[in-house]
Image 1 (cartoon, rainbow, N blue to C red):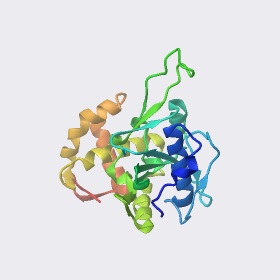
Image 2 (image 1 turned 135 degrees about the vertical axis):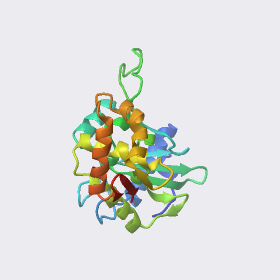
Image 3 (image 1 turned 60 degrees about the vertical axis):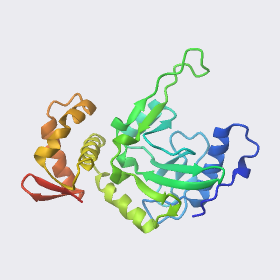
Image 4 (image 1 turned 90 degrees about the vertical axis):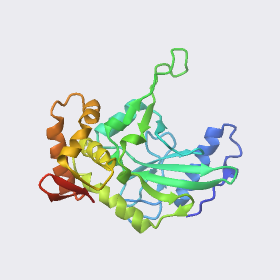
Length: 255
């Protein structure tokens, strides 16, 4: 990977946002690789393709690139809420590349990939509609809430200017991919429970300790009135997918 950004490619653009988009997408076309297979490059997609910027020429996995000069802390701004939710429900969500660059150095500082199967409907929130006087009146964008994504699914390709070995990246990607075969609804529960468990102070915990997340999970899934049962179910699902290990009856360990 070459961490340098070529801002001269956007010399004809007046908007800072347009310049950033042109430059980072050009960087992605030169440097991004597929995390799901051995492909060393991704193919750029036609401009304005909904929720997709790149596609793997080998396995056809799709990616969307988001970039920021200040980094991504809690949320990512997205375009069309309805289109994104349609993609989530139909299991067509792209993988997300989150690129953080620094100026005036014009260098990529951090790059994270969030696999598509780690993005649940809980993490996609609508923004306020545009006003009636706006050119696209009533149009609704979305916020991708990174706080609702398990840390396991935030996979670094570049960390503070250091390029991570693609072998390590693909190994971590493959680990979270163990939940990809679950239904969209089931996967959403698995992700929410896994994220809650990651907030515990130690890797080993009991079923009783997992129950402390009942209020949080109830807020995320208000239609479900059997949260404790769901937690027990998801502990078993995560165990069967190799993300938890059952130490003893009622005792678990994150892997």
